[in-house]
Length: 69
Image (cartoon, rainbow, N blue to C red; front, side, top):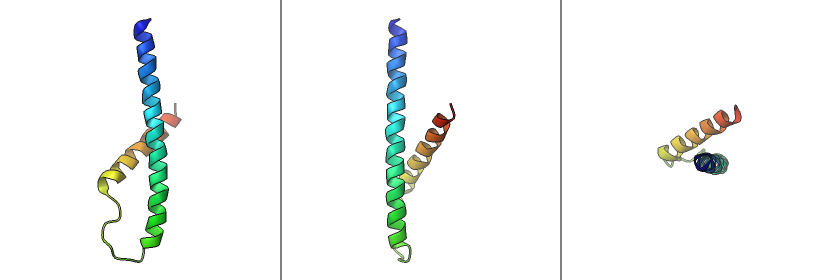
């Protein structure tokens, strides 16, 4: 019983973390698109940090994988 309760807590916590990551990814993605539209015609170099884009890609994949269950 104790093990089941701990597993449920960890499972719920992981779902909450996934939800927060997805919300951040959506916010950051919309923010990036807004900034990209403003800076599209300027040659300012790299607009998007590759690490952040990797995290957003991963969060998006998690979001769509979670939606499929």
